[in-house]
Length: 114
Length: 113
Image (cartoon, each protein chain N blue to C red):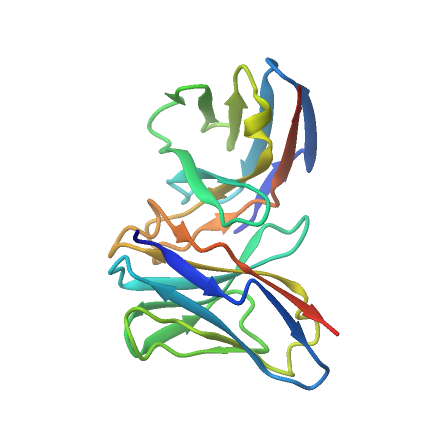
């Protein structure tokens, strides 16, 4: 089945630690996105990538980093600079030129701080 | 001007009733308005979408009503079912914004049997 796989489902971060969230897709989509979901705040865009080896900051990129070395993969690193990392993180992808029309989401990773 | 305001934050409806979720926007450059449905522990999925050249779009029990002059749009769920219990997000985008979606705050719907 085609889709987006996020792992792990649950992740715990210690103070001062960097953690990496995995996102893999087999939909052959060019564009990939990372969103952060907090209760009552909707979905906020962290980073997005429209092609391999290129990515742009979204609305809340501070404290996060990404890479896009392969079309299928778009990992997100939550760095120690992100002071409030507890949230539900969602990865998404879209067909070329269709980000407005339809985003395909993974099942998310819940990140909590120990 | 980039915001989309969604209300209510939560909604409880009896089975068979009508669920109504409202969204408002300021930026008249928005020209595409989708709704996403999210079940607990899952990612959102596109439910239905509308463009401002029509005032209503219906797909099964789900209808979007769009009021361009008021800059408001709403989702109506007719004959609401317990399986409709989920979080619903409205969103908006503009052609010039590289396809980025601006999401509302979300509405958690509970349909009681």
